[in-house]
Amino acid sequence: MNKETRIKKIQEIVERDKKDPFGKIEIPWQDELETMEVYKIPLDLLVYNKYNGRILSRTKSLEKQNQQLDVESDAGKLAIEKLLWDSKPDRNKKTQKNISDYGQQKVGIITKDGIIIDGNRRAMLLNKILKDSSFTKKYNYFKAVVLPVTLDENPLEIEKLETSFQMGEDEKLGYNATEKYIKAKGIYLRLTKLPEINPAKFDENAVNEIADWMGETNGEVKKYLNTMVIMDQYLEYVEYEGIYTQLDDREDQFLFLTKWLNNFYGEESKRAFDGYTNLDVDDLRDIAFDYIRIRNHYDGKLFRDLGDGYSDKHFFGNREVWKSFSSKHFNIVSDLPEEPKVDFDSTNLEAHLNSRDNQFFESANDAKGENQFIDNLKEHQQLVGYNKAADEPEKLVKRASQTFDAIKTNHSAFQKPEVQKLVEELSNKIFATLQKKSPSKILSHIINLLESIDVDKIPDSEIEAVQTKCKKVQQIGYQINKQL
Image (cartoon, rainbow, N blue to C red; front, top):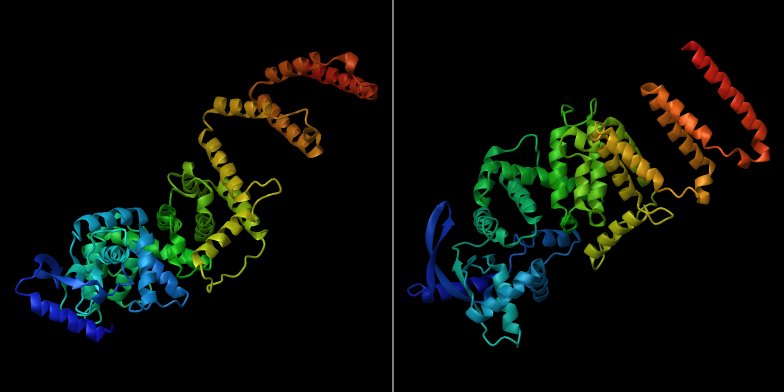
C-alpha cells in the first residue's frame, strides 16, 4: 500500500470516528501539551519506523552494508520485526502474552501517513499475535493518536516527540545502551547542521534542547556526545566505521576511557605520571581500544587499571609501569599476523566481525596457550599493587618468599643458565639490601651457609676451588676484624 492510500484511509477513520473516538490523551506537541483523540487504526495501514530508538544501532549498521530497509515492502517489514524482537526477546515474550490476554494497554502515536512514532514494539507484537494460531485472542488494530503531519513535513518536531517518549520513558524498559549515544549524536548534528561533534566547543542551545527532549541534564547530554565521539573513533580504529552493533556490551569501558581522555589531554593532570605528553595519552587511547575490542575475554574491572583513579592506582599514573606496559603491548601487537580485511558483504556481518575480534585475541596466545594481552595486563596490575604496598615491606617480603618456595627447584628447567642467573641476581639484591641495613645479618647468614656445607659431599672436581675460596673468606674476615 503506498503512502497516498494510507493517508486517505487513515483520514477516513479519523473523520468517521472523531465524534466518538476510542479515547483521548495529552501529548507534548509543538511546545504545548495538547489533547488528542485516540483511534483504532488497522495494522495493515501502519509502517514501522526504521530509525526507532530501540533498534537505531542495528538499522544504521545495516545501512553501512548498503542494505537499505524498504519499510513498506514485506521483506523490510519482516526485517524490522526481527530487529525489534531481538532487541529484548524476554520482555517481548512477556508483553506478547499480556497483549494477547488484555489487548494493547498503552496508546501509540503515528503520523497521518501511518509511520509509527511511538509503539513500534507493541505493533510488532500485535502483528505476531495475529499470525500465531496458538493465541485465541487477537487484535487487528492499533490504538494510536494520529499526528496532523507526515514524517517528511515536520521531522524535527516528530524527532522531539519520539525522543521525549522513548528516551524519557521507554529507555527505562531496557533499551540497548548504545542507542542513546547514537540518538544524541543524530539530533545534535541535525539541530546544529554541523558535519561532526566538536567536544571542545558545544552548541549550548542544541545541548539544552536535547536535554529537554531526553529528560536529562545538560552535563549528561554532553557525556553522551563526548562518549559517542570516542565510540566513533574506536570503530574507525578497528575498521568497523558505522557498524554500531560492535559497541554492544562495551558501554562501561567507553565511559571510563572518555573520562580519562578528558582528564589527561592537556598534559596537566595530577593523576597521570609526571612529564607525560599528549602523545602518551594517544597511546593510552589506542591501547584501551585494543582491550575494549577483546572485552569478552577478561574481567571488565581489569580495564580500570589502565587509567582510573589516583595516580597510585593505575598504570598511567607511574612512568616506569606505563612505559613497561605500553612497550610490551605494542611489541605484542607488532608481532601479530596481518588481519583479514573486513567483508562488509557478509550475510552475517555481526558474526563475521565478532570472529575477527576473537582471531585478534587468539593470535596473541603464546606457545603454552597463555594470552599475552591478558598476561601483560595482570603482570602490571601486580606491579602497581607492589608500588602501592611499598610502605608494607613485611607483606611484600613474605609474598616474595612464598613465591620462591613455590618454585620446583628440582625441575630440570630450574637448572637452566638463564634461570640460575635470575636466581643469582635475586640473591645479589637481597644481600645488597642487607649490607646497607645490617652487615651483621649478612655475616650471620654467611656463617649459616658455611656451617651447612657437608664437606664429605664436596665433589672431587670442586675440592681445589673450595679450598681457594675458603682462604679468600679467611682473608676478608681478617681484614674486616682488623679494620674494626
